[in-house]
Amino acid sequence: MPKKRFLILTSDSGFGHRSAANYVAKALSEAHPLEVITRIVNPVKEKQTPVYLRQTERNYDRNVLRNQRFYRFTYEISNSRSISSLVEGTLILSLYQSLRRIYLETYPDVILNTAPLFNAPMGAVLDNLHSTTPLYTVVTDLADVHTMWFNHSPDKFFVGTEAVREKALACGIREEDIILSGIPVDPALGANRYTKSNLRISLGLQPDLTTLLFVGSPRVNGMIHHIRVLEQASFPFQVVAIAGGNRELYANLKQHSWNFPMHVEDFVQNMHIWLECADILVTKAGGLILSEGLAAGLPIIIVDHLPGQETGNVEFVIGNHAGVCAYSPQEFLTIVQYWSSSDRNILHQIAGNAARIGFPGSARNITAELWKAASRRKPAS
Image (cartoon, rainbow, N blue to C red; front, side):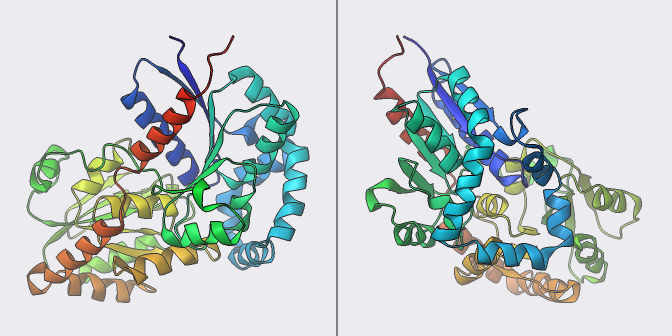
């Protein structure tokens, strides 16, 4: 029996799109280890893609960090179906040749898209080739998502929350074409059978201390100040800090002499283990990392967010009482100390709220739908 071929389109504007793609690919290989061929491609990096798009993605973190007001302005002014249609026309012209070549090289049974840039161009390729290959899109934000996600080319949309489902309906997507799956997270989340104490020992941490997990990225601002203020804390704890490619943060964390147990990493390949050994997640408001924290049942403290789509992510977490947003290091310290008091009852309650809205099986749910779609396809001649 021929193997089923899956093409996953992704972006490297931030880590979320790529991580979502990797997690679905992992779930596919685990569910059907001898039956799938999966290819993950970022079309922006193809040689046929115009230089301006490649440069825009390459400088994404730096540009967003330096020009947040302008980013918010462009996000809001383009967040309508009419303006999105104009942008999509430009994207079709810019990405058509790259996507056509990728499609003809792969000849996939199913296409999954994890970034809004590729909906319209991929749809144009399929239309012009008279292809019936199913095109699915997974939306990687939790609440206030951009209208461009909901171009009418995809056959189905995977969404993370009821709020995103409502936005899809408002954009004219049919109800039967929307699947509430959760944003894909590592399928290993929730499968662990070890206690937090045992996990901490395996990672070289102290087994019984309250563990704060900080997760950064190149565009996270000021996280070092939120860690330093913990030197004033009055309860026993330890910190795990994952810089996520933020070189300045990583260097500062390694150089400083801390008065509490500190474990520093840059990148990790086993994020699910670090999440499952933690008691509190401290991070930015990216859809993927928040989804991972919720899937792990962690109370979340958001210390940085991007104006525009991440504002909705903040509101989603706070509105479901799964976490808070700290607007200063001192406010952050007050929150942590409050959560860690009263025999941790408050912490346990917030953790329960997080688990209630998390989707640890999201990647497996998406994989099941993709496999069904691929199984309905006739074998290539």
